[in-house]
Image 1: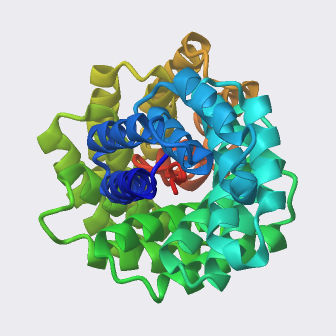
Image 2: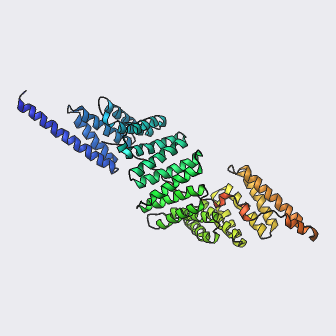
Image 3: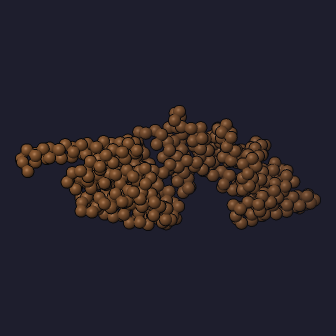
Length: 441
């Protein structure tokens, strides 16, 4: 073969290689911009071109990228074939990313046990300088543990991811990872309260350096909910207030504003700040009403009634309990109809209307038998209050000589003891999970 012909072939190969590398770069940029179909087309072109040159290593890289794109478009089986081929006789230097993508393919196929093994291999392969990749793999690993029901391992993974993101100066990712860690630490019941609080405090610390107001508002709400679950209501109040202050823009829906107001009002109730809570309850109820969302509207009306009962304004308490009861009837929520009837029984007792109190306790007891969600604890509590009220009425219907004695044994049937926590609970109605995508060259 003449020197000129060899030079010509070499030049063509160099041109083809440059074109392939350019396509790989373009495909990776499209993948980062979430233009998945564009990335897939670009990676396909690169792979087809790579088949015409003798440089096997470049072809393996193209297969690797093509596999990543197939995962993103929801074709994990095709992805797995490409990824396995990319490993044969090549790609050893990128085994961390390769294992990550194989894990992602199994993840997509819902074979979570296999996905766990490959995510763990990826984490072991990555070096210390690849902290972000380690953190990304830990997040994926965490969600796989959730899917197989191993919540304590999930919490460990998310917490480690949070620390890795912090070291990598990724405060947004760190905060979201710590939020997930706290959630599953609580759900697994395998961690001490001190450990959960430490994680929540780390999450709050990360929030201080985040500028995205929408994300901040969401995260403050979630962290506030977890503080409330632990009954650290002062911290919860600070988080809900911060979230509410951030959520005044047009990008926040009425529903999310209603959730925040509901949560803030419920925490104020828990802190016995009843005067302060009234506005939050009322505004949240109005917002849910404008959306036609009767069940959460009923919850807010119940919270409002409870606050008025604690302020000893029993007439308004009775009015809002009635409104809440109708909302729960419209929503078909039998459990909360039962709890509101219990609250009405207490309110009528405080108004001195013992017949109405007895009637509503009986109604609550009947409803408790119809709801599958009602526990024996609730039924026994209602029955005890009904019995005490009947006995109290009988005692006070006797001649005046026995009244003083009966007064000393009068049962504590104030609304604070008659309303189940569900009537004034903190509820979250939005919780966005997130997970890193695939890796490309």
